Image (cartoon, rainbow, N blue to C red; front, side):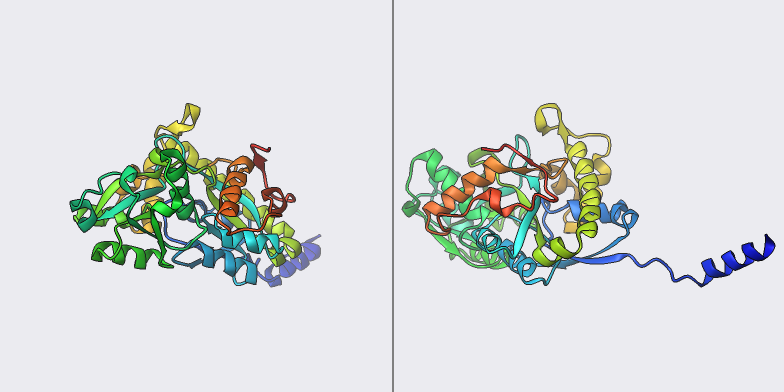
Length: 331
């Protein structure tokens, strides 16, 4: 028996250390993109034997391109025509979502330059007749302008939409007064508002709520060849999503901070570099199970098609990898 024990001990000692599965996640340092950094901070990925490397981008569409090309295994990005077109070709699929706008939560905002503000641009209702900067056409930022136009009854041609390719360029144009307004993700922009460099017009959740929320994308090769890794990744991702949801959401899915809100605010502040007070003011709505709102994305696809940015045969149901995703709100 002693000999057997010694042999077993030697084998165990000589065995190589367990190597975690390494994955790359394309993302942006925005408040709404926080399930992955929270899961890292809480050790959820480590518990699933996954080592996550975050790869940072400055807007949504390049993240979808990186996932489609295999440059990253997963992507956290706002919905875009670029993603829908790539997914329709089978290069990338939707496997989860963080959630869209909900009462009391603030993911995107309307902003104005000081010059346009002084000339009378005071609310989002005043946007007709002005230039509005966004990152790219076909993104959620573009869609929000369309939702406002439909609600207020003005044609899209009443505003001049300027795609400037990155959030940094958009903000520079806004500060410089070369554009009148913008739709931008909640982020360091609030610092610029506090400093008086730009003006805050309103949260999109109050003027043009968007139900197609932040997407969790998977690269085709990863989804097809590393199914076990994908499932374990989603376990960790959903645990973090539950934590964030419970930190900021009460009955009826409205804003109500829970006991773990301070801890989650700190995680988000560390990830984004924003002060905790701004995180608290702009806390994201996160769907606890990362469920995909079929109806919300279908409505966005219809609008993008009306703008000539998508083909007629693209359907959200065909862009979801049903081996992994949870859905709600079918049509």
